[in-house]
Length: 415
Image (cartoon, rainbow, N blue to C red):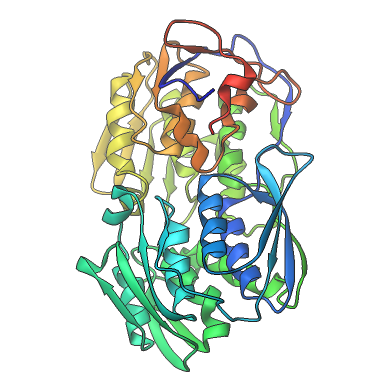
């Protein structure tokens, strides 16, 4: 059964002691899938995330002619062991078109990879993906000598592959670091030299992740373990701001993921930067801020505006519904302690992180109802199952449907 269109989170009545597992990192999984396809031989990714975004990437690789075998993971429901038969940098075929949904990593990484093939392929996705920026990547690919046809430099776009070419380009890190990562993942095979502009590399942690992953990856074939997703882990670490006693299993991580440092921000400092401190998990910190005993400011939020939804506006709007004292000033959100929070019907904007963040607030604030909760399937299909599972593997929280009926564990998987 699919998740209902509206659910209500029932607040935790007492602390729990829980050790929660979270699925593999989406960022690492989709990068590793590209590297595995370009490898010399077969690579098995263990603990790889199996969600909407990673399924889109696997299906795209299969459309490109790669053999990809997917096996269940005995430990984590939302993980898979994925074996990709690498073709030593050769792209077997370019199909007529590839659907990328609203997966930014798939859209950007596949655009660069398609240039290594021969022929033309149309990349397209959902309406929101067609609004998201692509221009800096397309400009870089053109500087490398490839043809890209795209109205307003956005999807849908037709990429014309012509194989590897010795060339150089510069890409700005200002709009999205995914553009640089897309080029780097295919650069060795493509014989490209990629330089950066617009920001310091230490302000682009996802590019640093890509570089470290490339160094560590078994490009000759073998096995590579995907670590847990730090952004997904932030929701469960965040429970400790409500009731202490929750830990995320297999932490700390390698340090490749900027959100691995999220537990350090549970002390709720006065200022947190999206550019310097946290990645996607800054949304978790923002949602918890009204519960703090001091004002907090969240800065450098510009990139949140061009992701799955306009996240700065969405967070401000939905928190205000709940009685939070929140002010938007440029790319900064200022939040005051808000002791009189109340529940509301939350619009998730088809954004998985909006759904998960406001679920966390619902563990404290009564009456929190979420529209379209199934959007969590993008990165964490079993999220609500984790919340309702009995301790010590979950929080033991009750989730009701719109009629007030408690949903069972089987009802809560976002397929």
